Amino acid sequence: MAVQTETRFGYVPHFEVTTVDSRRVRYQDIWQHRNLVLVIVAPEQRSAAVRYAQQLAERQREFEDAETSVIVSTDSVRGFAPPRVVIADRWGEILQIASAPGGDVSQLPSVDEVLSWVGFAQIQCPECPP
Image 1 (cartoon, rainbow, N blue to C red):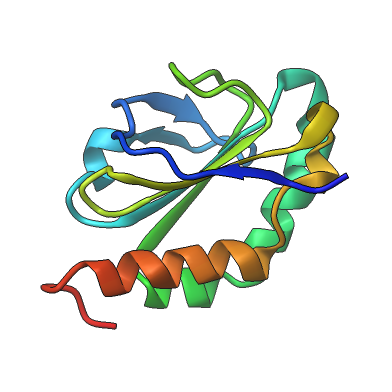
Image 2: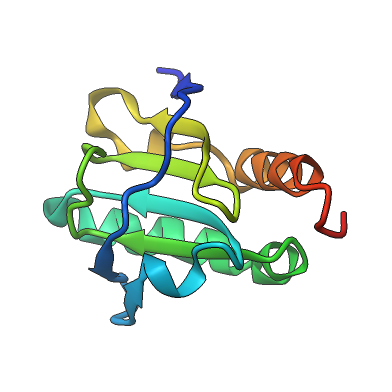
C-alpha cells in the first residue's frame, strides 16, 4: 500500500507531548524558530514509532542543518489522527501531511521523502538560509 499524502492549508495547533525518547516538548518553544516534522503514532504502536524515530535520528544532522525539529510521539495532537507525519514551516503552516494506510507505521514516508519536504520548507522562507 502507498503512503497517502495530502497538501492542506492550515496551521499546526499548539501542543505539548512526550516524545518516544521521553522528552517533553512544547510546540510554543520552537514555533517561529524552527521547521517541524511531527510524527503521531497510536500508543499501541509504540515499538514501531521508536523504530521510525531511530531512522529519523540517524539523519539528525540533516534535520539540524535545515533548522528542523523532529518530534515523534504516541500522544494525541488535536486534528491529527495517528499515524501521521506532518511537515510544517517555522511559522506553523502545514506543507504536507502523510498518513499510513491501515494504520501501518512502516508505511509512513521514508526519511528521504521527509527531508525533501523539509528542504521545501527551507526554500519557502525568504529570510532563512537554504
